[in-house]
Amino acid sequence: MTSPENAENTAAYNRGLGAGRIEQRLQGHDEQLRQIYGSIDSMTVALRALAEELRAHVTLASANETSDHRDVTEKERIAEVRAEEAANVEVQKTVRWTAWQRAFAVIGAIVLVVNFGLGLYLTFGR
Image 1 (spheres, rainbow, N blue to C red):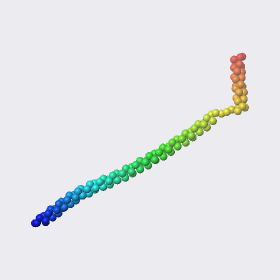
Image 2: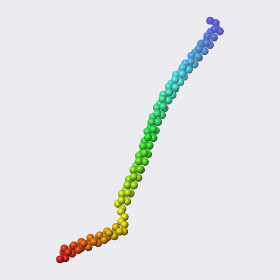
Image 3: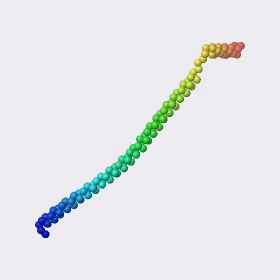
């Protein structure tokens, strides 16, 4: 082997060695990228699951809010009906007498007292 061939072989060897190192580094980078992409994929799946869970909770909260609102509305309506019924009962309890009804009541009370007194007089007066 001559010296130029030896120098050429050495240069080729060094180029191959450098290329091997570069390829090895690229393979390492490829593996690292696969891990990153795998992490991204698993994060995407996790985020989708989290989004679905969040949607379910929002739907449940919305349903509870609607139910609570419906309950409050129903309670208010029941309270209004009860207040109206109480007012009706109060009106029925409060009976206003007319003038002629009062006159008959007074006359009846006087007759009752006179009869009682007369009965006592007749019983014990003789």
